[in-house]
Amino acid sequence: MKITDAAVFPYPHGDTSVRRLALEAAALGFDSLVAIDTPAAVYGGIDVLSGIIIRDTPMRDIVNRMKRLRESGAVISVMAGDAGFNRAAIGLKGMHILRGIHAADKTAFDHVSAKMASDNRVAVDIDLSTIIGTRGIARQRAIARYRDIIVLERRFEFPLTVSTGTASVLGLRAVREITGICSLLGMDTADAERALGGVEQVMVPPPPPVRVIA
Amino acid sequence: MTPRPPTLRDKRRYLLVRVEPAGTPVDQKELYYTIADAITSLFGDAAAAVMIQAVVAAEGEYVFIRCRRGSERELAIALSTVTACRDTRIALRIIAASGTMESLRERIRPAAPAPVPAEEAEITFGTTTFTAVHGSGQKIDVIEKGFKNAHRLYLTREDLELP
Image 1: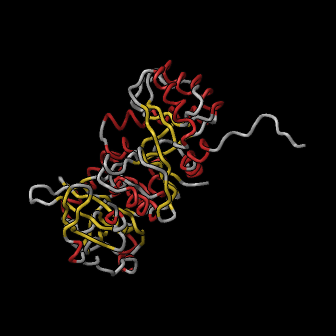
Image 2: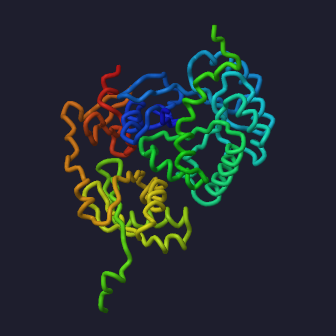
Image 3: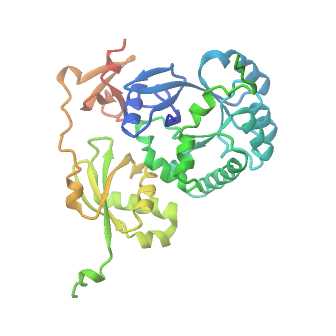
């Protein structure tokens, strides 16, 4: 299982080059990174996966973009919207991660979405930047939303991913620190490790329902 | 006041923490207030009172933080939510925890940051000229040339060979 940070924003989005992020991530215990709008590469033993985030786009355009991007090998994420939008997004072929669920409506991700995510192997992202970088009510809301997601995850077993969502090397956190922060969300060490390996889980195609043996 | 006998004293733990980016001047008092704020914001006043954290020493880029034994995990979580000290962006990397500062001193890497070579003192990255401020191994930190702009970019030496 590859320990992966599911979203970092290298230069020019941020102040750190992708090579430097890979160098620091290796020192902090990661095996791979998803770098948004950056070509895939391997730097210093760290697999840098290309990531694409689709946001503020009507569903029709998302369907068209998804058709084009499906074969690109990139990790495709969609920013969460309301409940209908999320269900439609989760049902799309080629979709990997549903992001920004903490900022979406309270009812945006329910048990129906959770079942769909489980069936379609779509992960829900836990963005630690809101927990690390905000204070007060914003952080409390994010923790409450993520705790709710964890409850659904325990029941429906859809994949989770963990991202620091950082644009700087200063925003990266060590695997042990991420495990500690995840404990605030009600995750134990095994849950956190499974979530850190969530990107690999969604990128590997599911086994076919019928296996041809001869 | 007579000091308490050792058996009646609180058991303490010390955390060795490295402050990033390298070369950031650390004011112990400011860092103490920053950490206290992070703990209070995350766990509340009651937990902060149990933890009784203190920044006991700063040696170069390393800082020793003390807490009550048994609360080091909570302290470590709170430290990972520290993103700035006053107006300076920092990150606190936890290196080790121990019962004595002496054993933590053994974990401090004595290597001083490598000096930035003269030919790299002025660097062009993209279309902008930067000045190198810190270099260590493959890592190199630069700031845009001009005294008013102190925003750091974090690069590697390999990046600078790009066109």
